[in-house]
Length: 191
Image 1 (tube, rainbow, N blue to C red):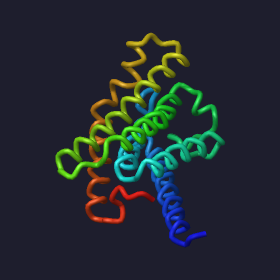
Image 2 (image 1 turned 180 degrees about the horizontal axis):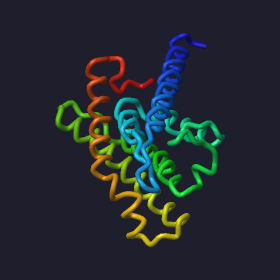
Image 3 (image 1 turned 90 degrees about the vertical axis):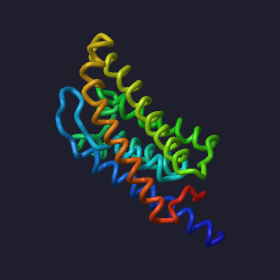
Image 4 (image 1 turned 135 degrees about the horizontal axis):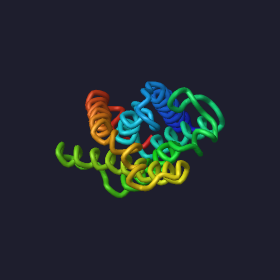
């Protein structure tokens, strides 16, 4: 096997492992906020989809979801298992996967532009898509599991978080952008 390919594979695994660890730590920062806890997961998700190429972003988010699904306590409140994924807030977790997949597909078609403003708009769009997917999946599952009406479910599971999530996503995108500028090796290269 070519040593260059092995190094690239090891970089990919290292980046994904680090991302899973960071997602886990950000999910453990959990403050009860009604039936849906406040966490820093959305900040880290924005960071991951902006910083890493599509493959590493997908491996990171789906790796995190799989590890949590088999019972490792990586979700908010240090929970894990299928109960967490199938419970009232599990749709938000599934939305992370759906949103990351959608962003990965979009990033392969929407190449990184040269201009700073255009690059910022692209990155912000990815964060918004990820957040909207999480909200949509989370809202549907929350309504299904709790039996709440759509407006009531929206009022308790999404509305209190909109401003906070926009701030967290902005921080995640900004951190990823600053890291890409500071570390040339992290600029959207194929790993």
